Length: 203
Image: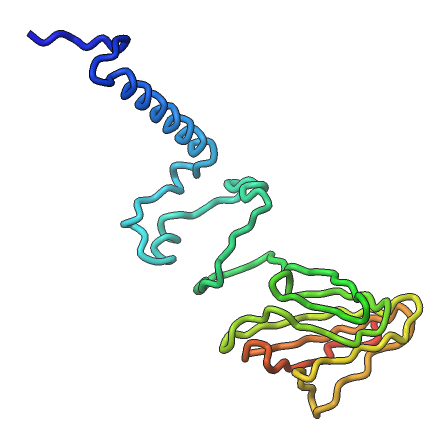
């Protein structure tokens, strides 16, 4: 007859195994509770085998108004890691806008931070950088809202990589507080930018 093992007695290391098991179970319980706190409503949970493409997912999952909490992403957003998002329909969207400053005659528009930039010209820009464009064969664009400060007559020296209609760069507005809007597009990783004057002398 085999007697029951007393877990309080050090027989063949059983107490240590039991302690490890208890610790692992507690950790698993804590993780499950955390997942349950943030999990999607059961109506939006699906077997991976049922999802073959975005179309099949759309047929399974229709999220109604008010079903996603305003702080669901907690300000984190979704990093697509430069991967393709195919065939989306988008509405009520915004573009990230940055306000870089001119420092020591240098201004950098970094496409990893935004695609729309509002710049107040507090001094002349001798060096303008268009940094971190998409890789060659992919299009990248910049919208630049250029504002003179209260002094005005600030100048901008455009990079040699920018090509303008007719081969001539536009003259930006010089009066104090004047606003010009320009756009730039590249398809070769920033080796060439096509520049456009969208509007001039807004006041």
